[in-house]
Length: 320
Image (cartoon, rainbow, N blue to C red; front, top):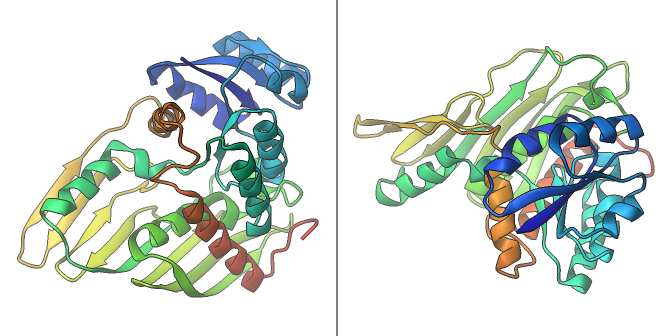
């Protein structure tokens, strides 16, 4: 049984708990939040024990923590948890920038514990089935990825609009697009980005194109326009459309050069975070320090890609 502690009891923590009951051999044991009323309500709803300090939570009888806070505190809490002997599943983006992530990974090396960024798409049944299908019926060499989402109906009090909490569309949505490009095209070679800011000082819309070892990508991300969130993956023998919302994938169409079309439908259950959580638990039991699906180097490449896009757009966070 993997006993979980949750750090932060906001929106994503509730989604994590939507899936945890579906994960075999896992249970919620402890929770902590910077706001006492938030953690008390969370524990009343889901069970486990509420702690008044993070130090008390990390000293409790838990095996792993899920860091569900905002990006500004991810590195701090990850390092604190690892030094306390706990495995860490950290909500994306794993840290604000590559420098912070490398600090976390140094602690991972010294502790021998498991650390994984919570990048959910590759664990969904649809994404897994798609990869398996392509082994038998490939679309040839993939050379182009186009993806993006701009969501204009987020409440203005959402943390994504907070500069102090490292918000913005690149951090909140663009990290998904970075994953997709790197997963299909390999390491980044160069990037060109443009974007504009909102009144709170974060990027409200950004668009960037990239060149990778395997080809090219064009992606967009935003909060002030409303744009379709699908993805296109193009190869020499066909192309894939992962239908919206591609980062919660449930349906894909593969169109082949020979005229064939294949539809894949794989609905997800329990909010979707249950798949990455189950994988993480399996990796703990295997004694791993990193996931073979979201390895540390992939997390490094993803945040480095966002770092460069932010640099070109002109978004610099406090302390950078």
